[in-house]
Amino acid sequence: MSLHHFFLDGQVLELETEPCFALRLSPEDAKHARVLRLEPGEHLSVVDAAQDYFECEVVSTDGDIVVRIAQKLDASEDGPTVVLAQGLAKGDKMDDIVRHATEVGVSGFVPLACSRSVVKLDAKKAAAKTQRWQAIARSAAMQAGRTLVPEVSEPVSIAQAVDLFAEATAVLVCWEECPATSTIASALGSAFEECGVRDVRDARIVVVVGPEGGLSASEVEALAAGRRAWPVTLGSSILRTETAGVVAPALVLYECGGMGRGGMSCSDSPGLARTAQ
Image (tube, rainbow, N blue to C red):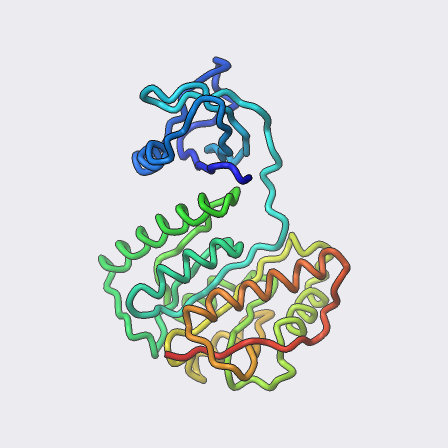
């Protein structure tokens, strides 16, 4: 059975001087803990402000949640750093993409203001949306038991994204006009060979997914002009942007997992989908 999971923003557990101490939860997390009706003797997993990972036993729930450390755990996440650059999508689609891609294992999000994005955000709205997406990423990471909360940047333009991704191991631009041979697996194989990657956990991979209607040809050209950038196909089926935004990074993590374990090569594999409304 998985443990209830919490992140601490301002508390380092190894600095606690008493064997039993109160967890300094955020107001939202404290409310969540009350809803869980935790009982003494239950165990929690906690990632503290130093990014250390602990299993803690609940000692008391009278007021604060008082715990003792049961054991320190391994806080590493097995896999590369995968960042999703997602074209701004309308309605609640971005909320769903951030939530589900966090569960899949995405390490960061860069919302893209694209020519075909229906959503147009001014600075004030962009800041508010970013704060909301950060909260969703945190909640999803807690639910999934992840040891890190993905970072969410404020929306950027295509030109800003090209500069931002300049040092990435690979930038995979999902585009429906690519030939069937331009797969995620083949692009990753080329990128890792070019960079001399020996351990996939050292890789930083950016996956670009367009909004409703996809990326324009000029946007793909601009993104693909960067270092180690490849347009890739996601196959002949048509996925909505909120589906592609989860499937594409999941495929990257799957391919990298196989590469890292030696149980799977960088051979071409059938992909999934271009985006649709």
